[in-house]
Length: 534
Image 1 (cartoon, rainbow, N blue to C red):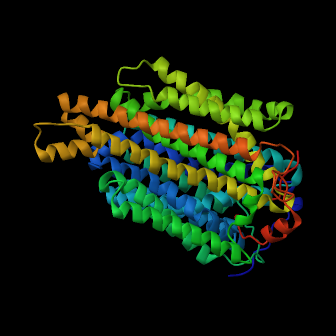
Image 2 (cartoon, rainbow, N blue to C red; image 1 turned 120 degrees about the horizontal axis):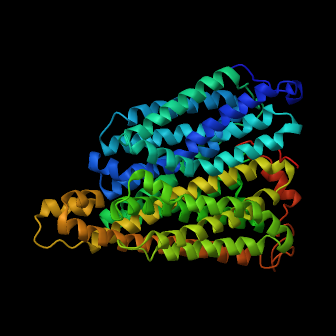
Image 3 (cartoon, one colour; image 1 turned 135 degrees about the vertical axis):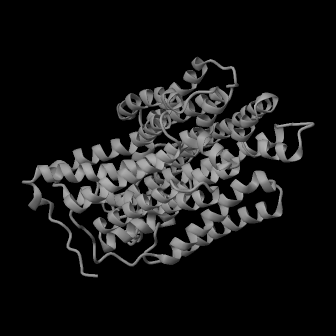
């Protein structure tokens, strides 16, 4: 493959129209892959009825995307850096669009699960390539504005995806969600061919293939065991052995990375308290957030009886609260320091999930709203200081590491949240659904998912809704517990702002020591640009 020369942004300063086209195309590609993390949740009731998927299978269909996305994000970004970001973007869009087209044609839950994983692989190629393309193409004078647009699209796409899916489902079936993916991928692919220049770092180190395989295998074993636990049982040797195997492989990944000259991700960076606090906080925030989306969208449609569009519109107040608080958060941080608004946001999220856990089949929308508003406000308050803690803890030469860690924390947290909270929901639903006198085959079908029980109607549907609410309550309380854990971690790691904790080396309070910097600069993580000042 011929070497690809990095573009010279200064040479392109006279072409603002081309810059606008590049920004439009990359943001369209970004929005498509980010929206897919949440958009299918609206279609789960319809999808479950038509494919006869069980609750465990629905968890897999949703989570396969995020799991593969998270597992491949680091190596896919490194591949784009080494061989060309435009090539990575084109390949990712082709895989994403092709997989979506095939998914729209199947009715088998197992096949759909595999194809969602294929979409995740395409998304892993697309996401890091979009930001790297923007920052390597735009001149410095226009780069900060372009990056801010990219960040806004990344933040808003999940909600936009829910609304788009809800609107489509008013007129068509769940297949239309995948067909929309095909359309978006096709438009973005044509736009990439026409407007996006190639850029790469031919001298970048080789991709750490062994590290990539270890992290993918460890996450797969861990998530598989958690999602299958409601069916096998949490105490089953296969469940416990699978969880232990996943953790052991991930520990092996850590040991491998510590010995590599060019690691995917240097574990030594977590000695930095601010970097560690930000990464853990983002992971646990999105653990709770995506788990909440998975659970609540089913509640709104299958328990409350809302249409897909009404359910999507019902969660809009969360975004309405999130946007202004995310803008206010830097102001509060400047006045009070990062720790106070950060902790306030995490506590608001936990309180909101606790409020939502009180919902039942007859709850008014006002109670839903009472949970959504503080949830959005808490996410807005906590996300900015958490993200900033990761990037500001590192020198300019390591901003690629901070950007990659933000993306990885978000996707990994979401995948684990859907797996764990979905399993809590499924296990409680099965355990609490008592159907005496019902034939065994019908009872098994009703226990497989709320959608199947709802199709039976009558007393079966009523009992199933009650059992689902019980499972939702425990799942949301689990999300609240995860957020409280994040608050505890942040409070402990930042308990003495500006001072290293006792026993910690210099640099643990928010700066990287020279030795850390020398080691981390060898990492072949997703190579995003240097931090843009201003």
